Length: 607
Image 1 (spheres, rainbow, N blue to C red):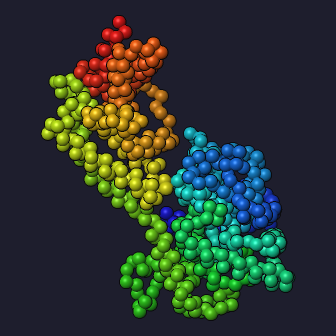
Image 2: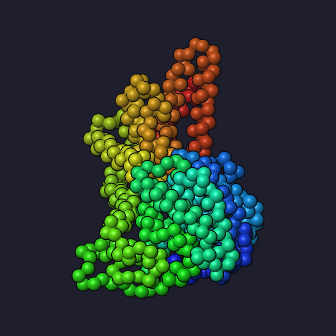
């Protein structure tokens, strides 16, 4: 995804157009934003000169999104395993603009095909929140659908790892592109464990950056001696804590965490990463090659960098004969490292590099290469999912054989139907073969659930149509056989009835996947019976109803008898509704099926 996004951005005017509007917003619209439509694309650019959102309590105690947002971001935290936390000052800043933004976006939707939301510095974080809200809002609309892209330049982080995971789950990672210059301290600022005496220094730093945005002719040389000392102090604090975070295996719940794709740019080009751990490591490695003064200057040089990204996209890179890589992967890594300036063959005219040896240490180059390897390995869940699709195709013959068996039972002369045939003839050769296929399919789907729970599959795996539909088809086809086996073996007498005591966990997962797929149920009535009964637990309910019918005949207690009658009556109403809506398979109504025999017994008892 990151390679595709980088190629797309570098080959279109989006980056340059977004930065142009950010520059106008920085100089002309302090504390606000501007809206401009270019063709079928609407740009919303937030000024980087926003009210200081605060860096004290917001850093150490980020706000729980579900407690502060009034439901605006509900799709993000509805399924979150852990609380989503965001910078409280940034959230307040967004909420203060929300009413105005809501009106602006309402006027754009339906008129434009795409909305690009952009911002520099703090304005970039506001842009991210605005894009997240718009995505949440559009998700609730059936039409019209507008594509959303958020491009930020040197923006601070927004939220914790739970936010990152929720964005992945919603498949919105590709909607966010964060452009970060090599030494810019602002995107890295919230990685630091800020102590009280740093707070005033950070406020001063933000204030100075605002002055520079308002007057681009200002240079770092105009820093006061006090501010120079403050910047140096903050720089080393951020560098130290960022190194520790880059090496940590598990993130803290409150630690700020990157999401989306990051485009790291410098004089030699750009590199795009979307694996969070590799993003953090690259942030550290690049900052480690800079200096305090560079960390401020780079926050104000995005215009220069953006202009070069497209030019470098068209420039061919090559290798010296003695440096030819051994594989295409090694070649890709080498070219990527060239784009980061972390491996230098010749002196480079760069103010930030002049403060130290142009020949960077071998250790930094090795760690940068490891970072790119980490980014590739971070995509293993996607690779595993692709391999799983191949395995799914290999079990299709087992499923088809069960489908054939159902068709055979539905057409058989004994008129018992699919469920009862398997239940009563389990020891026959044909049924034994079907039973083996049932086990094979169960093993496969249990392995899918295990991988999902162990986070070996992509976060949005359970939302992918291929797997939602395949699991639903499997459930409707095979669960009736599981129920038949459960009652044939008499397990209900040992454990209790199937739905409460015998149902496998995989089916509960599949139920949830189907409910959450985001597609409304068909309102039109079926014209013929379904191929498979739409309630995969229908036969388990029939078995319970049979027991109630047996008990009502022998029950002498009036109250218990009345309760049984009510249960039976409710089941009959439920079954008749399924039949009326044609949500059952024809085998349910087979002359000698358990359900047909139950209906006859029930009519006899009522008469």
